Length: 369
Image (cartoon, rainbow, N blue to C red; front, side, top):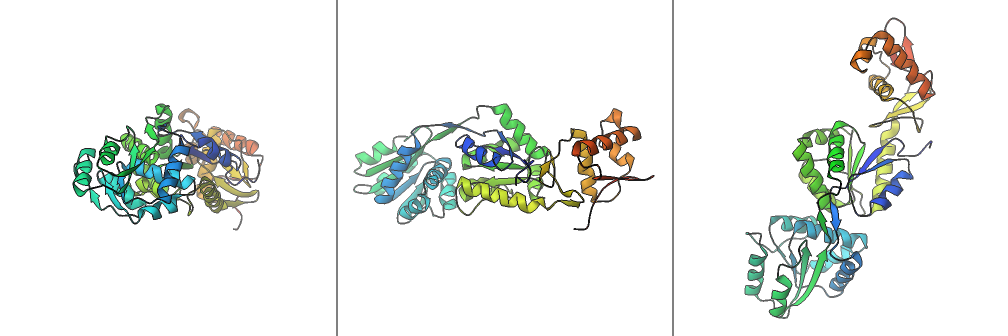
């Protein structure tokens, strides 16, 4: 459809949860959405129970907060944020002692704007349990964030020692159900096959980064993002943190909401859609499409690459030999270039978009900006 702000944009959603809601919002604005979840969701309890327990903690703030995993603590904050409770939850924890089972949990605490009072050097639940029992927990309200396999005996130990324990079990994550699809779209992010990659959880971002490192393409992705050729977008700062720590340029909205993420993307791609001015309107090149005056052109892959080369030249002439390098090897002669240009003109519906410069080659018809 003409005029849609995300027309021609290929956007990869790395989330398993709420992916349909996000995809629908993007597709209504013209985006081509690809689902490639970086993780699968393993529910230990539904969100309603987690949110109910979070509300109870906000109503009766804890004396001690135990963060057992970085992934789980981030997931808890994100779940609270989705319910509009993140700020209240963080405020409720400001007066508590925060204890972390290792540096990753401490990092997640810091990313939420808090500070850990103690960190288990061995990264074991046993060390954390023994430390708190030695300090004494009788009569104290202790919030224990769990993830994955559950409590590791912490709830029982603290309860037996006289604590009022509030257990918070965050949904877990497993391997992506479509691992091949996950690997493919990480590779496409490096190869220029998509315009944006979207993240809605820190664990998903960490899994995506692990695959990028395994493929050896993290540096290429970083370069594309820095050059503005690829948008990496997160729902909020907690989700963005692993990507930023890896040195990637990441955009995220001020408010941690899917709607805010979509609005940010619309604004970002609208701002970048100035394009090359032509008599037929601005020409904007996307990863897998060309958009002319808000209309996605129905080009062949060869036509798209020729137009991309001409757009990069911004009105300067490219010789037949230069354009021939874009064509498949067996079709790279002058006549093949001429035929490809004619097909491009016909398919684009803009016959004057590409100028023939006699005895020199071809150029995009560019007007004064």
